[in-house]
Image 1 (cartoon, helix red, strand yellow):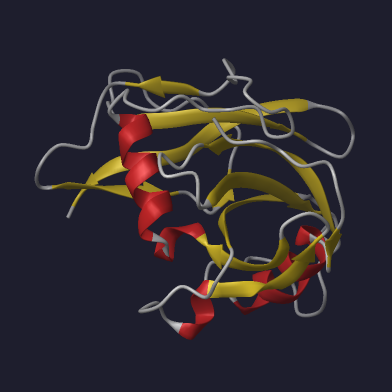
Image 2 (tube, rainbow, N blue to C red):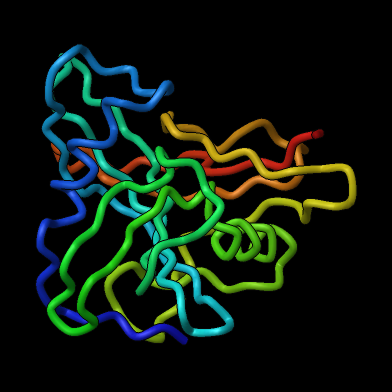
Length: 192
């Protein structure tokens, strides 16, 4: 299981996401700089122990109605080859591990493999900030993906569990800036 270091990261994940998020096609905010707050998430373990995997929820508080975004991220000790330039969220200096390359997880093969494993019931979601601690609030409804199916990550989160009977969906929670708890679908199984 992954060890969570309680140390510094310079620049911080929120600082990197503040620069990266508005450049994404799925960003729904106004022009300008978002004001992001960390609102939830969870981690997955890399079976090889090399890549940090985090599914972070951030809320942009600049709009009249706050918007929750899901940012799956990988943390690597070296640059990831073969991914598009926009996959790199940024680089940061970790207080224990040194330089880290932080990638958009949908472009990282380790992240996508572990997300698929989670949806098949073969991986256990971990607490976002505690080492070796499963997170029972993260739930998988139905099992998937099978051959011919893929995983779709929901970037803009909406509070709702999803339609009953639909299979292969990952549901987790976050907290709005006013303290209200919400749950929504983080990822679903979809046809290719």
